[in-house]
Image (cartoon, rainbow, N blue to C red; front, side, top):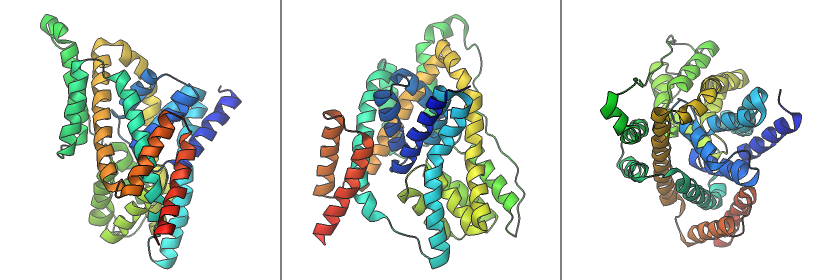
Length: 378
């Protein structure tokens, strides 16, 4: 049974991160490291990296799965549930409000003024986390080559899931080449695609909405842009419940709100079926993550002790950091658009590294700075 104080700590930490977590999974991971490794010392960087690698081996939203892992590590089974719910809940409530306004007024509320100042701060947080995690996870030439190679190939448009597993396999084979010469592979490591059949329906149905979101949550690897492809295939093409414009509005709302982008399901559910639809859509998309983490968490220490799986995990971690770096470069191109945003990113980096200012205050300060720049610029 979890200590009440630890459970309260899990809830407080992830509610806060759910409220300030702008910038997508890479930013969320950086903020989590700042909170639970650097400030609160729940675990060390190596354990954090092992959890990060494990989340990349299972489907679902990586940052949410990290909160579930960390909640379980800190407060047991109650923490597993509390970590995930606390991280998702703030975004869900905000998206619900925006969905209500969208349905009532027929337009997607804009939040560019907020992101203008927040995004440069997010860049600083990610770069700092990448540097710190990279120093501990790049153990040898193989992991360094995998990290840089995945970064380059990701920028060229290669599939990120293929890159993750290829990176893991390369490091595993290089690290165990002597064992290969002696006796070959001790086992096979298949990548299984899971598919849940969902009946097509012409008319809207809450059960079909839930099962469709459950199927997507159970098979989806990759970023929010991959999520967009899955949502379009089901809700626009197969079921015909949404238009392309409605889907793009849903993704836009997910991007301009804090927390996981997967709360796009909250928006879609509300547009289609009101409050019950929002709840079922959100539950369906996130429920598989709870199950996958609960099943995989006890296996991570065993993976680390195994020569084969431990090196596979090292490769996946290196590939994950390469993907994280690629996302950072893409975000930076879209976020550092003028002199004020570049200056804000540099100031944030200095404040984070030298002054060790809490990421919460940095995000809040970035939002205020963005408002000030927009106000004085007219």
